[in-house]
Image 1: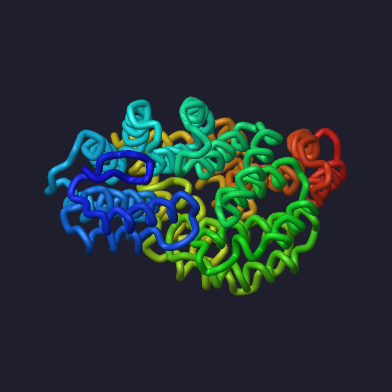
Image 2 (image 1 turned 90 degrees about the vertical axis):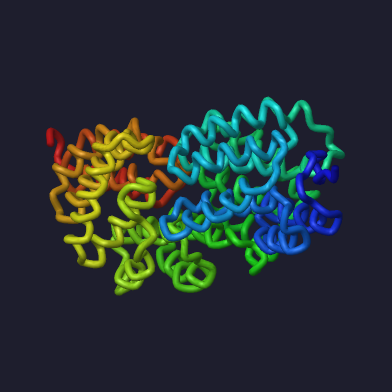
Length: 442
């Protein structure tokens, strides 16, 4: 039986189809090139080839976008109608749960799968990104940590695995180790998205915005071309560096230019736009009619029950575009999801609904009520998923609400937290100055 580049047996494959499939996996692992085109070419060359159908289903399901996930189900249906080996059945079982919305079960199945198949780079990347979406940073680190000792440096896929491990380390605050691994991998896979993503996160989390702008400028040709499907996210990070440097106009220029030019019609890409505009709004920047345009792009991409992280960013757009009724309707749906029995219900109940309530109160200028909703949720925010940098928009909002409500003790506490971690940040120094100016005792 034919095998893939990592040595796994492949059902229904031909030699030509395997070449296309391996190219698709390599493109996915690097987030450079067109993975879907590789999988489509593999299916065209061998219609009974199971793994490219499963891989397509996985990539579509990872969007967690209600307009896209049904397409994942079609690919799964086509795959399970074909003869499969044990590894492929394991993939299909996990993908089934992911499509059903049972994401904790799905990643649990992937975790067990990887104990049997530690060289499955597709499964490693899927598990990493699934745990990122679930906010479970420890497993992003440890799952790669248990696999890397088994990998020889000359095994195909070793360098991408390094970058996955590096990102998991970064999300667990092993910043120096993560940066060293990512920079080392950049020597062999310079176009890898995960190389740039990991170093970018390290520089963001360690408060080195000047270094971040320099890193991106020096390597822009390696992450910003049309061959990089996730370049919108890197542009978003660059805009955050400019905010930390107090350069609001530069951040807006990125939003209007390369970010929008590369934005995808997917919920996760739209969250970047909402988060950046929300930050700029709280800083007093004039974002003009950008919210109305963004709200139109959000249409259909978040449904109040599929992904709390996306729903909260959709709420931001609805509020700032002047559509409070839409935000209230979304909140009602989120409450229904919270009261349900699906795996995602506890996330909506514990974090999603209170965050939405807090955002609505903040928008209406009821900053005391915003604090009442948002402050207790801080310790549960990880549940909505996303990276530490992505979730910071909520801590940012809490800090701003404390300042605007005149609650000096809370404002000073949160400002001190932020400046201790990132003392060079213009934004954090702004919070500190505003908190210090409040009247003591409030």
